[in-house]
Length: 222
Image (cartoon, helix red, strand yellow):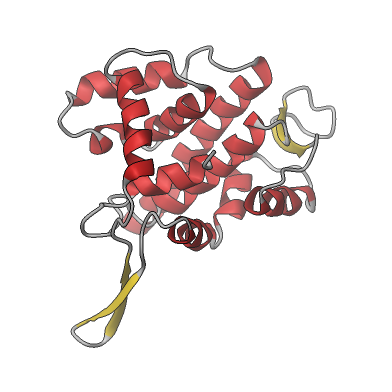
């Protein structure tokens, strides 16, 4: 199965232009949130609400290390430091993460990288679609949940929670009523589709993404 971060990145790239429909502040932090949520779903990290290993609400590494190299590297990065708040963990994981996930979706044959220059001077990169079959499947599953009301799998629910936190759902399905799809995505995000530990992690990750995206944007505009 593909990673949440891979599916999220595919949804964030316009198939024809190969450019991101998500701004450069939001995308890496959303991908980091996807990785953190994936680790929580796998039981590789948990949110220490009781403060057993330090202050409450920190991300704690535990359980079996994931086999996937990206996830394993992320666990090693988090485990090599004192337990952090989810927002700090997302900032730590976001460094160079976009390029790592891009390399993976290129290697999977889903997109290709094209390099160019603007005005013959400024380098540009874009990633137009090559094989859209996987993304179509992801979109179909999300549509069935968000529009048709089908009960989501943990993977789809996790992905929808990320779309809700980043307000991406209406952009992914622009032909669907914006209010309707936003409310449905929020409903799924807050639903009881996961156990208590994962539920806590989902809430913490979503809040952390919102904070991580909002604060740099406010600073940049001030």
